[in-house]
Image (cartoon, rainbow, N blue to C red):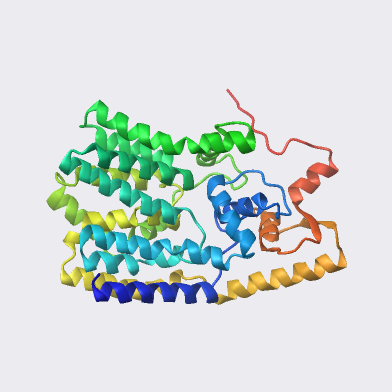
Length: 401
């Protein structure tokens, strides 16, 4: 391995460890509590009701680690180890230091680094999917197509959205292939993806539990039929999303589209369709999934001037995307308060009321932070009001013809 790559990878990992020590995850950030809550629930160490979650399997895989070492420090450590692995995979595929360093200094990487998310391993596996698919195209060897399908199937177990990625990938990359090719890819994708159905059957007595929850939840979310109301497209948020893979992403994409559209037409169409999926829900973490893919697609357009400009701008804006140490202090303060409360009111149920009326999962956040066994259960204000009014209908919708 090139010495610059070797030492840069080590330095990157050390900096991530320091980031892990002096920053903190945001407990109520989107979906994050679901993964940690599921892990604690599988360990019978979660003092709240588990209603719904993203990727039960990811939480199930986190559970043994959280049982062995309580808290989230080591869980985050092993989670962000995927970032240097993705960087090394990029270098292995492209043989380009520009691609390697562009990823290491991508703003979206540093934003997501302190978090706990299945998007990181899913991104790694998607790059393998694309790499082996291209190997299949060049060598016409079905072994590579099988590995490609298995890789995407494994990614779908970790991150639910990969089911939609599979549909888009199949349409875009197989529209000019034989039906046999698509069938082989789909069969081996399904072979791994079906583990989810076995998992759901075993734990929930219904094989399509998590798939129906994912599809139904996102459909209702897009319609605005949630406590948060209707989603509104934000041009500002969408623009921020498009510059986070690297600052000149839009320029490089336009340049490649103009000069090499025929060669990379499938990749460009796939990228556009992926981005459009999140048009009304432009969250930064979604962009990390395809950031390595974008770099593979565009790194050849990086001349020295573009590369250095990207690096410079990235270094300047990365500090604005790192969670501040004050968040870590906040978690510790909450934990200390909960220890005092549990000592004064041992073996009681704690009603959690947030100052933000839209934060209906505040009780969930407290249950994740709490590392004790003296509080029987955290309940939400919604649960309390339902109990008080003897109401079992949590949410309802009226369909008007």
